Length: 249
Image 1: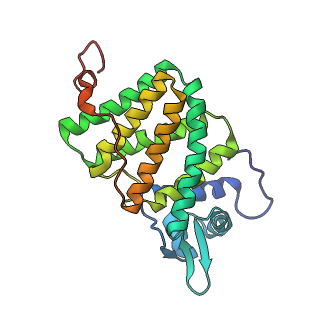
Image 2 (image 1 turned 90 degrees about the horizontal axis):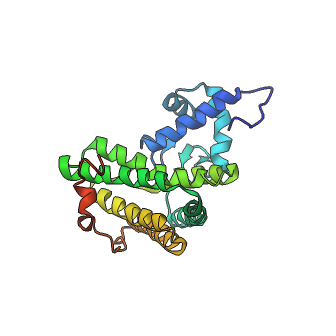
Image 3 (image 1 turned 90 degrees about the vertical axis):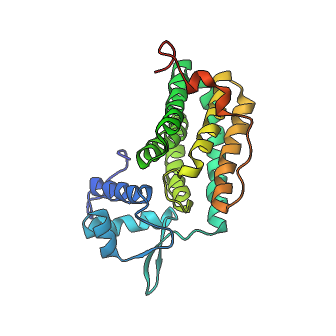
């Protein structure tokens, strides 16, 4: 964050921040894998940053539980185990339930309509053109974008920071990488659309229940368990699947 104070020695704040952002992008692009061992110099090359910035980055990553130093082995990216899964999804549930409740009260109707249409546009693309890598990338952006938007709407930097750190843990946990997989794309979009439906109705209790189910569904996927079923079918909304020129583009 730009407001953090700088130090008179070591890497400049901009370099430290850039090193962290580069590390984050490597996780998002699935170039860094859970349990992977790397040396400082390998991390320097991977992040395209000077050694000094990488050395200053390591304590922050260790403090955030994203990396640990293993004697005589080097640096190890967070290893996924049941404890990490339980803790990461537990924290996600606490933060997002609170954020969703507040978002329900503050988001405008116009913004909700735009968010909903962005999801339906992805559904229409999938049904019209099939699911390709570009669609998966775009869907991941829309998916996480809604979660990020709700958290940032709280206007609380401490919560936003905690959420983004935890999001990296969650993305490390997902064995298929950080993008949505073809076999779960439409199911994930259905869950989001069902959740958005509750937001549009300003039904706070339904909003909390549906975001909780959505997070449970993501945790089940990681654990290889069935997704919870939801009473929302895409075919029940023909006006969104096949919009006229006078409704939705």
